[in-house]
Amino acid sequence: MATSEWRESRNAAARARLEKSLRPGFPAHVLHHALTRPLIPPTPSRAVASYWRHHVLRADRLARALAARTGAPEGWTWQVGGGEGRPASFRVPPAPFREDAHAPGPGACRICGGPVFRFGWHRDLAGDGAPSKRAGWHAACVIAWEFWCAPSDHLKELKARQRHRCAVSGKRLLRGAEVDHRLPLYRVWREERDLPWPFLLGHWGAPNLQVVNRAGHVLKCREEADERAATRRDASVIAPDDDLA
Image (cartoon, rainbow, N blue to C red):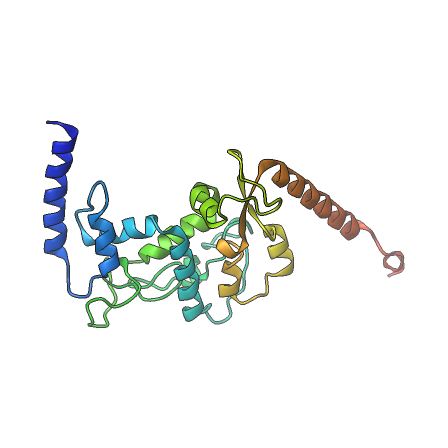
């Protein structure tokens, strides 16, 4: 069977299965996206996952908005290391609902803490107000988390957002362009760690990301390394009065 014939046959079966599984209120834009894929996803859940996978920046905005709606658990502070679900490094986004002490349980998202409804959606499509007890993540939050942890994997989307211009020089982005955090994450940990949790997430999301040509990125990293070294030297200096204490 020719590839085109196989694809037509496969898509016809997938479309029939998808449409049979749809429920009233299913997002029309997600369905349109699914039906225009080269390979149609055969289930609503896969259609939702495919939609967010192709709209990474939109997933980032939504996940941060959902986190702002939920807010951090009472008494939570950003800490790293020590196990218990805490991130091992300040380079991993703070996520209180991934920590053992604040795990929300079935039906709630481990990223934003909000209720997860049918098909991993963030709103109640069925209208019954009942979260899905089998779900632990919003489909959008999964994509957002991957984006926050590995923004370089989404270079194409970030380049397009900047109209293929270097954020530092304004020149055309070259093939070796790299993703950079405008405010380095070590400074977020050092200077911004007491900010409310939903605001912290913006430092891992699109608002703090830029694409720069490699030469500019190397220079910026060198300046940041010099700044960090100077800070360590200043911290190691012992004040004269300390010897008399």
